[in-house]
Length: 184
Image (tube, rainbow, N blue to C red; front, side, top):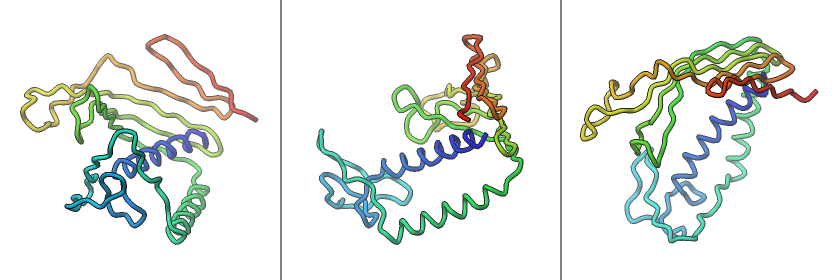
């Protein structure tokens, strides 16, 4: 289960890095436009800077200063220390999925799912999506409203279970149980 928790953590970190990568900056955190030039107007707080990069031009890689790297290492060590004390964990969650091609765009998620995550030390746990709602706006010319996400009563979400020896993935659409043995 530690691997599942690590996977969930990795996913959260990947999303965070994707958000950081989408707002390109130079080393000191200042947003850039083409070829690393500073923009004429600063980006709004919490909004990615407008990037007018030419096709084929790659932005500079994301780099931390030695002080920032030390701070990140300290945070990760504190997180590891506090996580090692967890014996059991049970929580409800909501997952929002965005689709830049077929979705509504912007900051509006295409799918909102609700589920439960459980963990028991050292390596048992489960991840289950229990409710799935898809974005279907009543009026596309109006800002998204809570009623625009329609509950999909017959749609079955992801379900993963780990018993310490293997991870079991229930693929409902194919009526399959996929077993991934864990390395010893």
